[in-house]
Length: 153
Image (cartoon, rainbow, N blue to C red; front, side, top):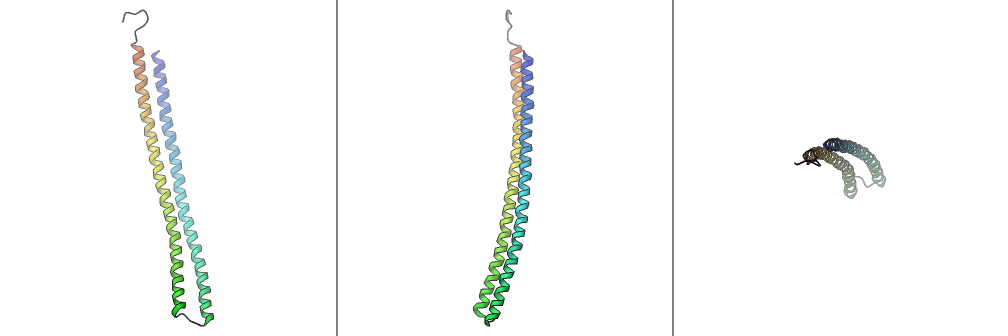
């Protein structure tokens, strides 16, 4: 009878270790997905930043043409408006870059969290396996030492 307890403990050990490893692998996959998402956030931001800069240059060209056509020249209010336009365009481009970096950092942090969760899951599997060994051994020993029917012990 005690062999059944040992066999059950072995199955529980294998199951606990396998479950912990499977969870770790799943979390590692999630971490890799998160890292890819971070790189994509950075790349998309770079592309969006370049598009913003192109739009800004086109707008600034139209502004310069309008100022030249008006005959006012680049003095006074026209110059101030143009400088403000340059500043705003640059800030827009930098904000796009910053948002991409935030997305990347967030995704990298998520990847770290997933890896840590995987490590904890694997450790939990090992602790579960150890508990199964101890429980199975204890039940087996108790069953082995149980008085037999008709015995005087």
